[in-house]
Length: 620
Image 1 (tube, rainbow, N blue to C red):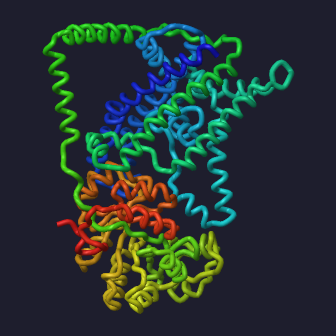
Image 2: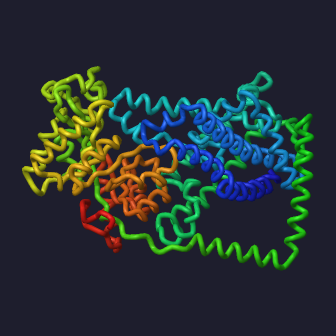
Image 3: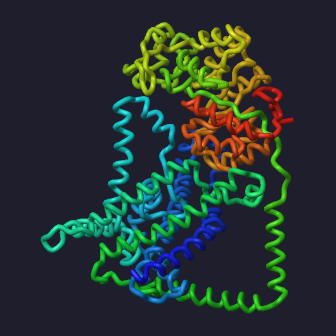
């Protein structure tokens, strides 16, 4: 117990340096390799993301980036484990010894251990975020829209929501001790995982008697989950990602309220995670090695060719260090370094205040709302009653060429029938009963787009519609033409917004009616989304929640492109996005979003280019 304070202090120091290393070097290099290849393939969105990396060159890039990320994540955790082991032994060590020892431990990733370790360190560890936390990917969550879709499947969906996290928590728990043996014994992943199972067995049954050590580890895991859950309940905003620490970091601190708040949380949470991880690893070491037989050397002996290479690298690095220190003693060198730092600081802070946002934030009910069967007139009416400015609807084409309002291409989820929408006529579709799901208390029916347009045209005070065009592979032109004809006939184009994941449909709508408000909808992209989307002639950009970053919001604002986010479910995240510059919240809960937007607007004095989405809100 006397060595615990030293463990905490050494781990906190290392984690601070490791985060700087990740922000300034590792992430930019890995991301740069990925972006260079992505740029060479052209910007690909949504379903095109996978196909862009199916070539030999694409697979090679993915393997290289994945291997680099795995190696850095393992090196970071391995170093923390070595610090915990060395301080537990009471050994003294230098940082040079520590880092070389951790590089020696990378031998555990050789062979098939590398892909298995990639799954463990880049997927299972951040998904569970229990015990081990690394800088590249501290946490990972399945996109919220996946759980949103599962909720709509009733009991079967709820079972899936339980089974998915249960599976990855179980796999992580079984391999919980594997990082210790990979780091300290240089064992490959599968051998270390086998050792982990043996430790679990001994920790519950030792010497023919029940043991308590296993329960102590289980208790520590549960305490970690409980603490993380309680923190998440009180701080539901998204954490900063490494992508947010770019050249505009100081500008963000100066101009962005959201960034200042989130950066303060990032610092505090990173320190808490590092301290908790140090204590957790000390507990694992005590359980796995109660007699202290798992001793580690501060500077382990390298073997074979690796020893020769390591010796050469050490000597060259030593000479470089000696030359650097000799030059640093010169007064001119120190003055030049200070001047360079000041120039970089001024450059990073340079720039005027962000331009005006396009329009005040709008609340958009996702498929109407969750309180009625989705994409039905009652769902839209309820969204209007909840204060939504618009209701988002999904429009497809029936077998007889009629635009109908429905999200899924198959009716299994909503109607319990394995039928494709494109194979049924409009009359057959509208005759179906959609059972109540989620929070809905009554059944619904599939409307045609014409029915909803007639409803909107009937009353100028009605809620507006955000029409998402959802063509199949071969009917984009027909569907877009049918939508154009209906909207023109009812004369409600100024009351609607349009978006699609199909760029051809977006361009067709823009060309036919440049005055309409038409945007692009994205849930994934190759390359930096905020490097390529500005080439498109769109009025707004709607992105899936996991794609939102301070960088994207800042660039969208500087380009005069309104940013909408789907689908947002949490009030704290809604407020965070508004503070970042998002002007459209697409949500299943428009009543919650209405309260958040009204509260935000009460203290918002910023000017806008226009008061509503539309032509006046376009950038000059």
